[in-house]
Image (cartoon, rainbow, N blue to C red):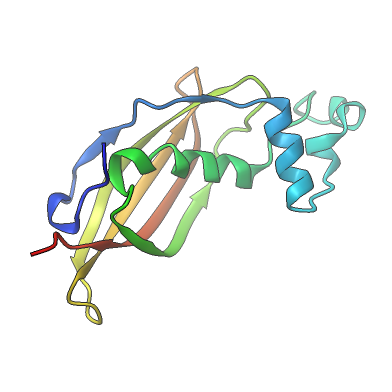
Length: 150
């Protein structure tokens, strides 16, 4: 499904995204390598065994990107002009290799753009859950969305 235009969103609208993703060890290691993050909690199994988690945890920014990424096909694919900001980010539970992530999006707010007559701002609330239905991530994201072409 292509993304929605500004006029197609409604405050309170909710999307239970069908796309899910199991996080792999390779995802975590590659993300840490690409972002130059040497945190042993993500990379060093022996170090991580001695922590409260007992194992490596997945990089939280990878988790955030994944939660937002799985929402794109249903909401903004081809109709966004860009992200304007992300706030209220929280990680309620750690993500481990082998966890399967799903997302739910709720439209929190929206308004016409003051500077672009062809666009509107949509405030998305994204919730990420693991296979045990535990919330693992939350973010409020503001996107500039195209209005339907005339």
